[in-house]
Length: 546
Image (cartoon, rainbow, N blue to C red):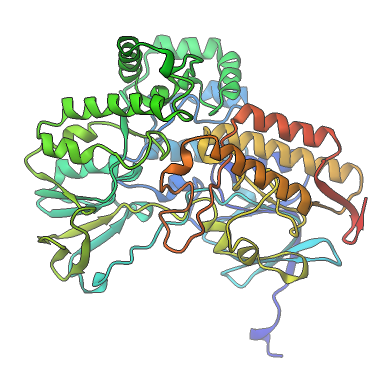
């Protein structure tokens, strides 16, 4: 065998982590605290995860900055001050870079390195992890901190290769930015990234065409600099406010969930409550009544309220009507939080094109053609979302016992136990994986809970000289059934959302996140651990279950 084709030297670690976003950074910190050796691989040039890649105009968090941040270190919270209610992408990236520097995490991170494969060695109870650099490392534990929204959907429109202008994807925006001054621009899609970027692009472009297939419900952010009194109050009551966030079903204190039922509330009072929540801004509208995601009649009251606001803001009644979603209940697709989104359609240089009525037929050399008209464009922005929840995991050749590929095991949809582990894949942990609250929760809260549970589990194994932990098929089947059962009790499955993978052609329609609420989920995870990791097989060797 020649030197060039020789097997690379395999470096041993206690753990390998994939991804340097919120999840990976905190996981590395916790493993370090356990005294374990770890290597973190990150495809990007720096830390940040989704906030490294998503640099489109207007990109910012849709959960209030104070809550969308780490709570594990009071010192970190005391020294970092957010400038706005909803942090921008640059500020979030700066925050995560600060965290990495503060806890000296970068010395164990290898950037510009994409993990391509991982295989479990049953004889050694270890994972061999391979990268696009031709490296191979070995680890007892493999933690996938790859994110729920990290693999962008690729545009697949006839004629795309013929387009003579520039194309962009909101999930892979040029780091130097884009100047659309004087250009005719088309934005395809009206999800969260489009709702944030469209007002910014409209300020620059000579003309902006927004190609909308399915409208989204959006609520105002009412963003702005923090009031010093608010910051002082938060610092004084930080521990209490963090606890209140963790005790909310969605992990968001600002949601301020009410126990009042819309169907038992007179219309005038409903309106008063919705107006107050609209003025407050953000996701608080969803917390207005306890039955909004369960009862169609209750949900309709919230939808119609937002519809009335669209009609108030948008001057052209036909445009307002097109912007109002009718094909799914409100909040069953992720609610968007915006700054001047609906008002943007009052601009003379903005045109809304309903491609549900007049479908896109092709991208042409000079622009885009629908069934009704040709549009001349200089640039096209694809705001078409992500292969959510499973995309990043399925893009890596992960093989468990018997060489079975995770992608094959998930061919009919993802199956996990608690969103943490997969039967047949020992010592493989997924942070906020399918079957956990993840995207139906404040991700910062969900991540801290998951990473804490994984770290405690690894400490448990190490303290008892156990080699492996693996979800049992029975526990996994029962959990998947429970996740589906709870989802069916809500209105969520009625929407063709990325929660179900409906935005990716050919992807199995399975409701992937757990909608039973973060407190109930956390209690279940704690109970499982307290009962000796019920539903998991623990072994002192690869084949010996204890």
